[in-house]
Image (cartoon, rainbow, N blue to C red; front, side, top):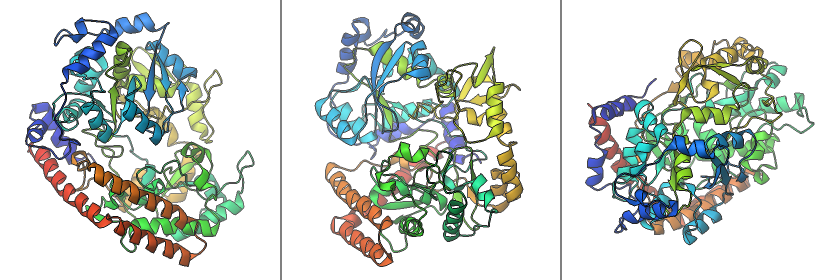
Length: 607
């Protein structure tokens, strides 16, 4: 199941033969700006002056002592401001257990509220937070403007960054940033995110329908052989179990308007169910990972069109929450539904995978949230060049490269969900009982606080290996749901035993392997890392087209009848073409071919 590309680039990294720099020197199309670059010395000088240390401004001898910082500030944390990549984080100073955990690192983190308008205001004013998540386009603009700190000279003093280079494959991602995200300076102005694969063994994630299994069992677990039958079964489930324990109505599924960014976000799960990905939707392209093809979403009977028709049918059947358009992502995630849809497939314990016969999935843990080798090549973490809290920012950067910290931040205080003896980590009896019950109820710490995911991108992905070992000496990744001890319990609870009895398979992986319904590599893997950024004129065209597509997509879902549905679709296609959609699509297809060649040059160098 391991991707051949990962093996080849890993070989490149080990041999020191990574050729990204060579390609970049030949002129890469991925750099968003080709303007003359400002002097980079000013960045370090400004930050050093803000930190009050003349030594840090020197070209050599830059030093930062993480242990000394944590020792000095663990009881008196330094407050730093953080701007997230999207609206997934709650704004304000992080409090509760997580806030206490950050204090042990000498930090108090004040999250700024996210919005597109706020992002634009930050860029226009130059009034940056201390640390900021940015996309590739904005990173380029900020480098040009001298807004972000050059990090090269600090890396040697960041112990967890160094450990991640040695043990978790961070090196190639850093080289990628230097050569493809530095405006041709070859310097490191940002840290990558989500480097490494994501553990999806025996898990369908967004790639497959996930049913509310206990309610599905209540109605006799009827076979589902098509998506039309999924709607029928969901309606039966609603009739049998109309409300949740709090008396709230349960719908078949729910969408949300909070996920609409550069495209209509609710199409994501539908695309994944069919072996497609969403990353080229801003260019009106749907990406068929199984067949290795791109096609226009504007084509008659495109998978995008079929997805809109599916949700329209859901609304007509009364199984789609009619308040979806007024629901944000967080609220949608809290609503019980009969099956996952939109952007959220249903990750809670009560949802289990259902394979609709004849369907195939693309399941690649190394490209799920970005490219495993290079990370998410459109999300980076930068430090404000003018920060007055340089040491605290460096401590934050180092923490974000620490798998142990990622685990502790999301799994709660030691002694509650897990316990550590020496370097051996095991589940507590409380955690074992919770996982065995598999009720879908939230986990609460002993202090009464509900456990939750700090839903932002770390430098390393969730598959990063921690320093702790499992009870049998096995490696452990930073997300507790991937620990063998927890997986063994999850695979032996009553709900899972019911799933196995009903489906006739020992596990989801067993089902996938038996039916040969999953594809693990694609000819399109890792192309996204080498794609270009459109110019300002094209961005304006894309934004205008996006508004048309998102607006029409919602209207089609809520259309009164099929005639209205089809009329809205035809008008949307005509509007997009009038706005230059065909030129946009062709530009991206040509760019994809260039990116494919660059990718192949890098990957083939190891052969």
